[in-house]
Image 1: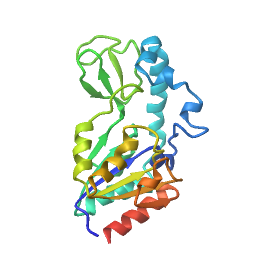
Image 2 (image 1 turned 30 degrees about the vertical axis):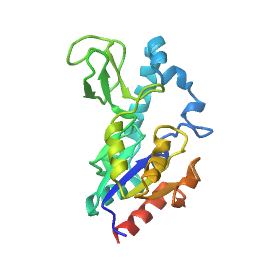
Image 3 (image 1 turned 45 degrees about the vertical axis):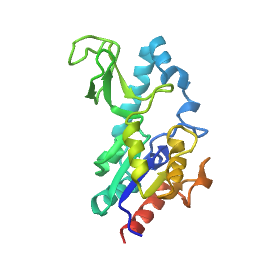
Length: 233
């Protein structure tokens, strides 16, 4: 079947094959850090030094990883397919872009960007950030924060994502646990429209696996290129 509009949701599982730590696995990030202290607005207000240290470490860690075969396969799909392909990622790394993807929404923000709490402007950022770092635009120290969505905050670009889900004829979920909303509800949203084929590609069945018409399980670096090859035939 030839598809015209493809929406692909990606989660931590696609970057795990590049060596990026997942969050909810037994040895994931939240087994080592208290998410309430490093991933909430309240935690940032209580201890901004701790939060900056956490994200500085994660930002620096991106230099030690590279896109894997799953990232490059999705970039190839965007480049070579006749369909409009949109990547909606829950990941805050830049591996999709480094693989060549251009049409992408980071619904949970981006590690290599910071946001001003004074006026909301967003800046590219590749170095450490601290409470003493002056804002390049206003000059005030202490007003910059990581440009990531913390627990209790609304993900970005939900209106655009909703329109894409309503219009797609293929929805693919890759490397997601199926228990983080609103992303976990995307497949049900697509199914309610009754117009799109749905596929789950994951290391193991997600919590919402029964909602997908097609499933494939295994490492993303192996299963995603095989899936893309099939779509491009």
